[in-house]
Length: 358
Image (cartoon, rainbow, N blue to C red):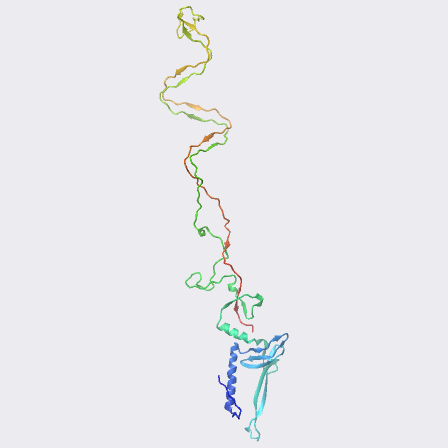
């Protein structure tokens, strides 16, 4: 940056020197653009109750002192001029000409000056710098915020477009994440049968060796059973008669004596009649049996009907079985409820810059 070095001993003041000084002033004025606008508070002008303090402002790129006081809606620019007498006598009156040399400008509340504007147009310098920075370099940037919602800084607001969502980094190669603001996921899920890992439940009851099962059939009312024996060829049936009571038999009499108790009119002498006197009729004998043989019969069957029986049951015995196992089905378990699908989380807010109110 250019500078002017002054020394004691009669520095020659000239128009060139004055032009140099004015150029330096203009160069400094261009720095006011750093505020992000042409009108803002450079320093001071702090609000204290109903008053504002002194300070420095920039109005349309011009740096001006600000005289504080009671806050009013309008700010005005006061301009004063001071004339000096030049050595030149352009009007020929024999005196040096008077020309305006010192122009002083400052701002204060009111509307009596050369120009007036609304006090609300004056924003702190940092507002202008932030506005320029965020609108130029950080457009559409969202920043994390952990303060109270009511304390969000001026010029910022909640970024509701991301509310309630976990951010995912853009990935052009992943179809789920290859588009900004694409949505997906869920807070909780319920697994479908297809999503459950493939598995089975198996088991075997304890092995039992050869054994039988006994039991009773259910009670049944009166009923009969019918059936037939298998067909049989010519055969005989052997057997023994049942015990009989008292009866008589004919027996031989070797002494040819006249039989006792002879009944000549009956055929009870062993198949002989006609006055045979060699047999006698025996007296009654006790219980005994006779052997007999039935005549041969051709193929035939015997049918039968059991007697009707009242309510009764049948006992049974199953055949013995070797070592074996039993299959079974497990009982159904599970309630089918949804489960948490999110990682551990902590809530923050995202805010975006929207600019300061004019």
